[in-house]
Length: 272
Ligand code: ATR
Image 1 (cartoon, rainbow, N blue to C red):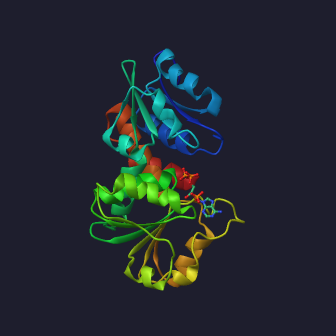
Image 2: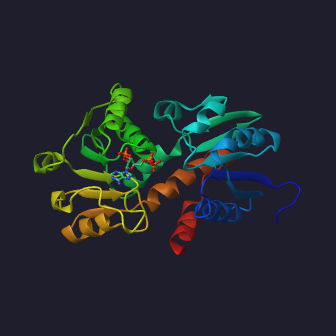
Image 3: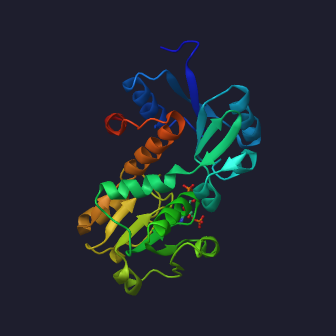
């Protein structure tokens, strides 16, 4: 029941209608009997500044930030966590007595989702397809955990930019052309492009380059055509819902200082 004491958390994005985050968080609040409520806000780019200021004015506990504001939001914040600073993108904001602190839980959310599948990145050769916001968060997590990173992207300059900003953290190479020679040394492939969101999208790589020994992780859900190909080939495959779940669990803990009821959140996500 919403009453005068209810604490409000939001999510800012555009579009926002398809977000699954309210489902997960409200289920978690209900399960723990916490008087919190999580609501979606459609925020346009031109009004992002006002929306962020409103977090203070309305005394919200915090918000999630989603597409397309994760990078643009940074200039309106008072403080950044270490990983948000490096990644240059924020998906979670905490209102700490009127000071707004930005975090990026996508990065560790990704790593935990892999750990839950018993996949370690340490000393593995990992290929990331894509060099956008999601790819950057994943790349940072992998380098922090000691993985060797290879990045391939349609726009090469963006891959080189990630290399330049992350090369102090770990081993990172840009791949200019995907071929069998490259793929033979790779153990984990991650689709971190947005390809597959639409049924008509081309695949992010030629399936003939995937071997059954590869672990194939796709951050896009529901199942993409490249994911189906990887399954057919016999790869261990991991879908994007785990990353969504764990980034949410970490954000929940930032806002409430309580362990997230991950099982409950997962159940709601799966039922959806
Ligand atoms: P997100 O926040 O989801 O990462 P993004 O920052 O817009 O979104 O990044 C989208 C990624 O998908 C980019 O790597 C993009 O490649 P470019 O950097 O070349 O734009 C990739 N992508 C999107 N559409 C693509 C397409 N048709 N072919 C190849 N790559 C594509």
